[in-house]
Length: 65
Ligand code: FES
Image 1 (tube, rainbow, N blue to C red):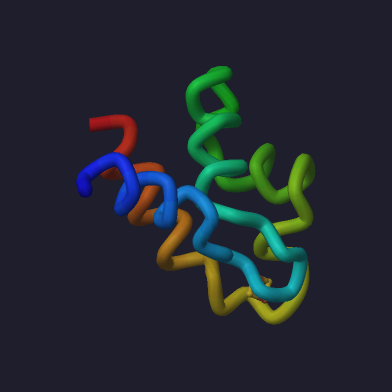
Image 2 (cartoon, helix red, strand yellow; image 1 turned 90 degrees about the horizontal axis):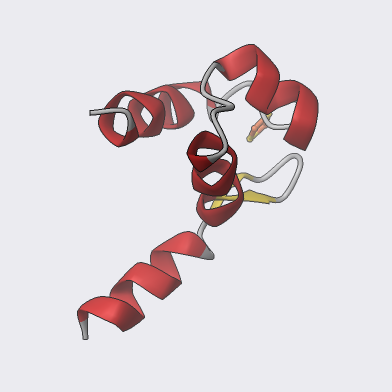
């Protein structure tokens, strides 16, 4: 159950403007891309309407511990 929930979460789209998934963001964070500007440049997230910024910043804060 937990594995399925985790897999579904990774496929959740965090940025609808660019189609960037949570899994894509966390994979980049795992590879030391851990600031919003870099994540935005590499994925296109936060380069449209900007409404995903808060959720991506929260993910960054939580994922970095
Ligand atoms: S939802 Fe990410 S820029 Fe619009």
